[in-house]
Length: 117
Length: 113
Image (tube, rainbow over all chains, first blue to last red; front, side):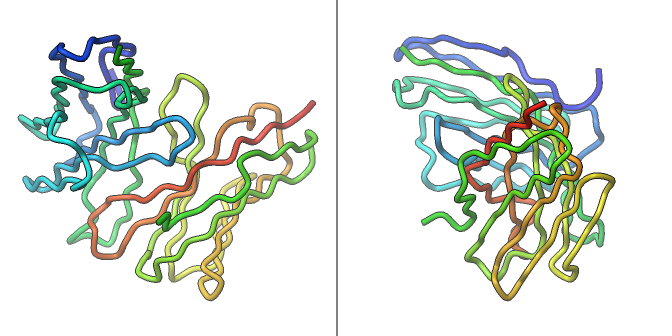
């Protein structure tokens, strides 16, 4: 497999469920990201894991919990979500450009379409 | 407050003509700009980028122009092809923020045969 792979592609869950989104990158990158795309809104950065640091968007609710066990795998754990959390969740990876003169674009997976009922 | 804006939600162009997609930004600390293309049911794919030290970057049919004084960039596609029909996102990176990108809302381009 190549690139960035996300599973599942579609997920329907109730507000009391607990589920996890999975992302795996095969590009040798050292940074991974979660983005959220809601209808008619720009892509919104949720979390970054880069050079063993975690950076988060302070506006993301605690019902979203990321986990990055190594540089190739990224999870987003979901619990007690709300219907307004329904969106496309995109994972991306890149090389962290800090300490390098090389600008590395983000490579995205195809996303998980989440519906909260 | 959106720091990266794409004011045209959609654009329709005839095949063979030029497509011009525009993007405005407000943060003068952005130092690297990118364009992504997104087809339905797929993730965004990287198209072309430009560093703030340049004013133009060209790759085949795609050219990105940067006007720093106006805080404006544009993507030119010439000649446009029906396969270019997609949503195009402009993104910008802060020079002190690793590789965290701020995205615009996207412009849907439709190229008519």
